[in-house]
Amino acid sequence: MNTIQPRYRQIADELRLLIASGKLKPGDALPTEMELCEVKDISRHTAREALRILTEDGLIARRRGAGTVVTTPPAPAFAQPIGDFESILQYARDAVFIPERTRPASAADLKRMGVEGDYIAYTGLRRATGEAPLAITTILVLRQLAPPLEEVNQLQGSISEWIEGAHGASVSNVIQRMEAVALGKGDAARLGVAAGSPALRTLRRYADTAGRTILVSESLHPAGRFAYEMKLTRQRK
Amino acid sequence: MNTIQPRYRQIADELRLLIASGKLKPGDALPTEMELCEVKDISRHTAREALRILTEDGLIARRRGAGTVVTTPPAPAFAQPIGDFESILQYARDAVFIPERTRPASAADLKRMGVEGDYIAYTGLRRATGEAPLAITTILVLRQLAPPLEEVNQLQGSISEWIEGAHGASVSNVIQRMEAVALGKGDAARLGVAAGSPALRTLRRYADTAGRTILVSESLHPAGRFAYEMKLTRQRK
DNA sequence: TAGTGGTCTAGACCACATG
DNA sequence: ATGTGGTCTAGACCACTAG
Image 1: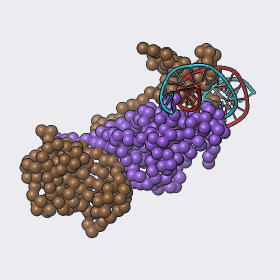
Image 2: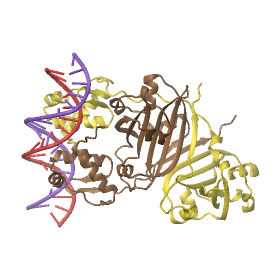
Image 3: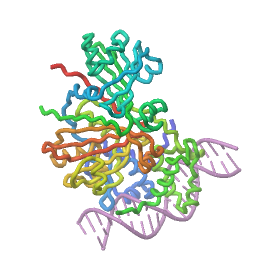
Image 4: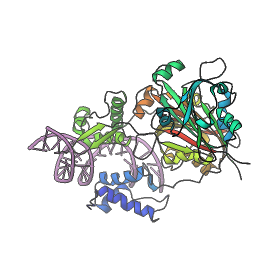
């Protein structure tokens, strides 16, 4: 193994060792650039390069006029968990889902939504009263649990609630994923916005106590029509 | 307002604009160091410094003997699992915030981020190691609690943790808001994407026990580089 | 005011990739 | 063989911090 390292890296590693070993503690001053130059017999540029590495690694902090010190590492862990299961699903009740099509989920559906198995797909618009549609939503339900379309049409709450009521299945956890995407032509047209315009994509996977993914939903919310908001409260012991 | 920028940063920004505007596409060659030296009438060191910035931002790739090219962005989206109050703040530690500017928050800042009062604004990039920047982040901190920029620079964790440690202030709840937006010209350029392209905007308001909003953070994540993921587990009573 | 880190110049030699 | 980026030297002036 040819272990020839540039000089600046060797020096950076030497200093790093001093910090890691505790010989230099948080707050302690490192040698100044000029001191490094003399002691190591290098040019200032090389000394700076070594110090830059440590700066980028977050090990030291440099201040013009003041000097270079070892940084104080991380931070106190931040408190207690909260289990706020219901409020996550809240928005499903605020805006009504109006299914328009039912079909067996295609391979593309399954891949896009990150599941495998035999699912029925419902697609439709989600809207609040009288307004422009808030989102295009696609829902995949395990075929053996899937309600007929006419029943879905009258659902007031979320499909997941229907499933719980009708089958006694129990949702034990939900994974929710949110990201920004550019709307495709067809989706954009249905939402009445320009193709390529931004949308918030939310993907939710509902798993039952056996670990089966019983339902997946995908919603595309065009920018400006929807924002997802959650409040987290710190729990005190 | 101090608008004097070092020469190397000016040049980095010029090049960044060429990339963001599409004049230089992924795979295209950038000027060589010597060309930059002549065209901009600078020393090689200054040219390298500019190119280094873009390299660290993940916008370009350099190969000895071969040259410098614009990188292909397909940074695969990576998900940030988030489930509780602790881990919601966790990601602040995984992806380092690199503050670049400090200023008193403007009226526009305050309005955009939904607060009123006397705040200090920090803006910078959020990135994981070596990759393209994940986000542009702006943080508003109540002036009376705001740390000096040099201290922010060495923060390992989140600024909110600094505040808790340094002032004994206590965050009692966080309101998080997510939505899709189209990136403005300047932000898009900083992130190396086209103007108007989609981004996930996350806004967090941290309130203390007295109800004061002590900190607000806004992040703009370009599509494809980041997905927010949370797992919620139903609590049994 | 002395010393620090930040910026910048003008050179040099080298390892490496490409034609 | 040429030219690229990687490393390194030896200077310089400046803005800022601290005693």
